[in-house]
Image 1: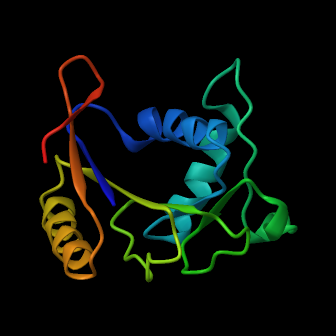
Image 2: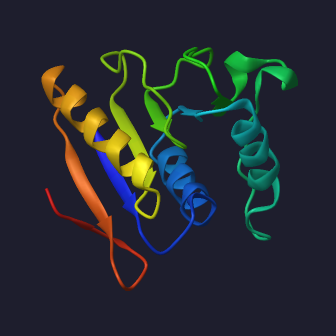
Length: 146
């Protein structure tokens, strides 16, 4: 499981690129948010996040959930048989053993988000997952710290 610690940028400024990289690798993705409102905001954002890109995605309200390369939810389902699960906005993960990769993105400027990330780290390690920690650096990229 990968933990991405945001310190300078917002979730919106990194999620599109991370999802594109996942799709480029041939992965199917579920993005689980902490609330319906956040899911809907991400849905709207991803349609317009970059003028020169198209990021195919959908939610349950769009239908054809199984056909979505990126499925956005605030629940535990995996209707598109994703092999990567992103957890954002303090989402509580389901069992991650069916996934090739779990990605937990948290806001380092939100104290409760940091507390939750530490808890998720401990849970992931206790469940036997390999965990890595990536901290946002000054140049806007991520550096592996643990």
